[in-house]
Image 1 (cartoon, rainbow, N blue to C red):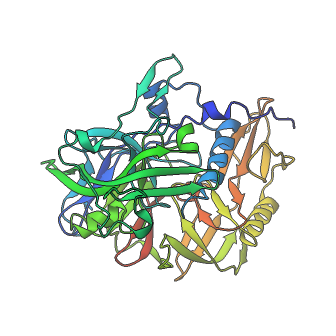
Image 2 (image 1 turned 60 degrees about the vertical axis):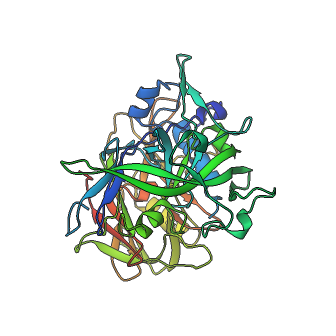
Length: 452
């Protein structure tokens, strides 16, 4: 089956971010925010970016798989006895596309007077940075809509916020490698995310992140945080990926969850929920429930991440005692596994489906795709389960993607990509769960949820 070439990549890389927050904690509050996928209908409708790839189209999946190959190289509770929830000022509902592989976005408010920024959420990195005092060509200042209008992004400046302070070079959050090369007393940073020269460079600053309690009182809570004043962005950040900032949710001290916990505004935990119906939430300070499943994190002191161990894979009635580690990363669209796990899942899946396999095509990012007959709207796939360290089961609920063909038909594909190194559980394997990243107990918790 012939496929047209995937063209106009740069123009399609206009990723748009939009969010709100809501969350709760043990000490006093919890936080969370609204989430939108970069290609979700609410985002496209708001910005009028009709030229973006349609959900479920081949270009849509090729684009996100391409983005994953780049981003993978980056530097690597209103219940259960907790008090008030906290949310971003714009609310706590979350929305994202029902298709596979989402980047999520939050609308966060920072500074005095406050400015709103559309930031990408990423559990695979630590620093929260915003475009700030941009050097020439160093930031994306806006996006052009299909009608020719331009949507202007806010650009942060410490000089324009009365609550902003530049971090000094002797701060505990300023590493020796972050020292500025000049005689400046500022704390400089440079984070290289990709081998293809994608980075953010600037200085670290402190300012307030605007939150409210998620209750009838909606009490304002100003959380003082440290983040990056990104003066120069390079690579895919200038092509549209995270054009208005990146919100790192990692384990290191510089991340917002770590700062909220240190300041006793939230317990040292947060939760993500990706609903099967495209609705979800993110909450800071949520410690999970007594009936959730759990597995411990494998914490490496040199570079801590949300790394877990899988001890068994089951596809249909076939099981394999494969033990390996993988990182739960909300910033990666598709799950990436190396051999032997990738081959076992793919070949077992292939042996159990009824439809004819489509001839592999280099344009399609997935290796195992199957042709649907005319007017065929349903298909059967084998159950897939990952047994985690400790014995709890994690059932993968949404492992496939549907792609239209040039002839007007459709394929469904096992949305799994082969890795040559790191194993990553991406967003498509997280759908249908309320996931708790508990950094106090150092466990990942999960529970079936529609995220309502």
